[in-house]
Amino acid sequence: MRRRAVVVVALTFALATATAGVWLAIAATAGNTDAAPPASASPSASASAPVTADDYCYVEAMIYYRVKEQELAETLLRTQGVDAGASGFATGVAARNGDELEDLRTWYLSWADARPAEPPTDGPCGGHGSDHAQMPGMPSWSALQGFVDAEHPDAERRFAEILQAQNTGMIALVTLILDGDPHPDVVESAERVLKQAAADQDALQGILDSLP
Image 1 (cartoon, helix red, strand yellow):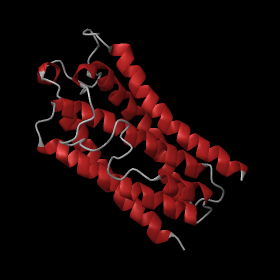
Image 2 (image 1 turned 180 degrees about the vertical axis):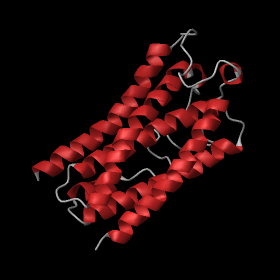
Image 3 (image 1 turned 180 degrees about the horizontal axis):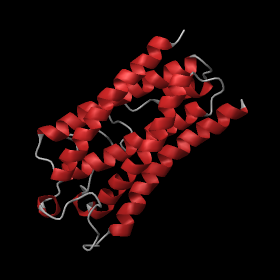
Image 4 (image 1 turned 30 degrees about the vertical axis):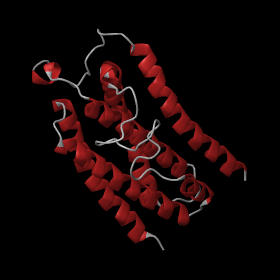
């Protein structure tokens, strides 16, 4: 029971922290027109390209997706007796997301002026709500509770199924973003996301297929 309580609190805190981080970043950059461009942006076309609300939507949504993905991975790694393939995948997720989140947070800060005043009701982020909890594929509270309570091999199964659903939602959102006229940096990032998501879906299905 103690492990379940600790992990449920950790998952709840993670989502709350992501939400708080978004608002703190907005407050920190309000009125700041001198925010530095993202480190990965080139000083040519991408630096001068206009940033739209959809670009900001992409960045904010991806932060939420990656934070949740990382928390799920770290939760699985705290579970006893996890299959080596699943634990290796989770370890890789937890490690790689740090670098991507750094880029996303840089854009988030420097693009704050493009944030819409109210949560959009249409477009790629329409219906996501003020905290993106209604994004496609985001796990429900009951799904998270079931995962926290699970033991091997059910833990690996629930982990893979939650991430498969989240990846499917993320792919749908990124595809909508790319169907518009995104910022060049968003295009580059989104194409990497789609490639990584496709590889992850295959890896997650492999985890499911290997379980008893």
